[in-house]
Length: 333
Image (cartoon, rainbow, N blue to C red; front, side, top):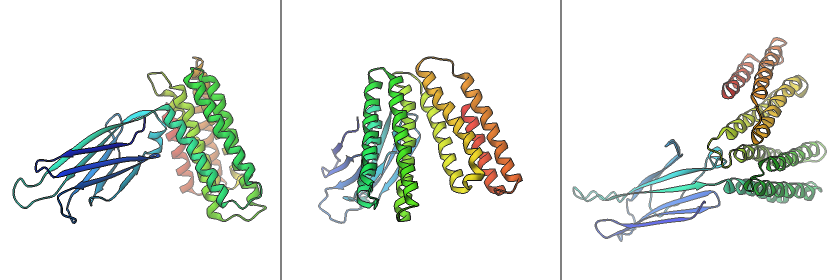
């Protein structure tokens, strides 16, 4: 679980040096202290966070003692149960004579569980509810908050089902949660055309909803992987997230009528990937689904080339879209 950790140790000259690590929600605060009696101590250090494969996913420098240095989990890593390694190096930088400098290094592990991932998304929704309550001028904001509360309840039900080994039922709860998120987004976008809403407020809400949507999709993947020795479900869910992000990008850069067919094809791919997750929970052969997804991605490339041919998009945009689609095809394998 994600717990607060305090590290204290003594160096050779008996001056107490400490490294303090405090977890606040999903943010870790790090500080170092050199109790040498000098206020302007030159103590400094650095820290790094690595995944289970040893890959550094975050690092930073500590330039001054008693200052707070914060870092948070990379979202994709947070949404995947794993064990991370936090390393902190500190030195008092006392260089008055040879051998005067003292250094210390500490290592701690941070375990992220399935429960942590679900709680993270629930908290994301809670933060969005507070933002809407404070910044949304619409008279029906309480209705939006109610829908988001129902979304949180579906996530909690999904987690309960998954840990009780009823993963299929859990996936249906997560699918319902995604429908609620889409409902909130549709209401926000429609109402913004009828009522004034500051662009920055609207942009933040939509961006946050998309983040939550992506995380719920990843929850589907890690739920499928629960109690299994592989991360295939997470891999498939990650590809679905890439498709959804690509659809968002297309919606922002191509008008609705020109992009309608292309978006329809990509939506079909996303549906096939979601169905793959349902098949996996029932030990059904899903090869045909992935094969179909590849064929639809080829069709998507044809749609992009057509839009380029009729001059609805630029060559640069076409290259970007074709590159993203090819990358997704490679991910599917």
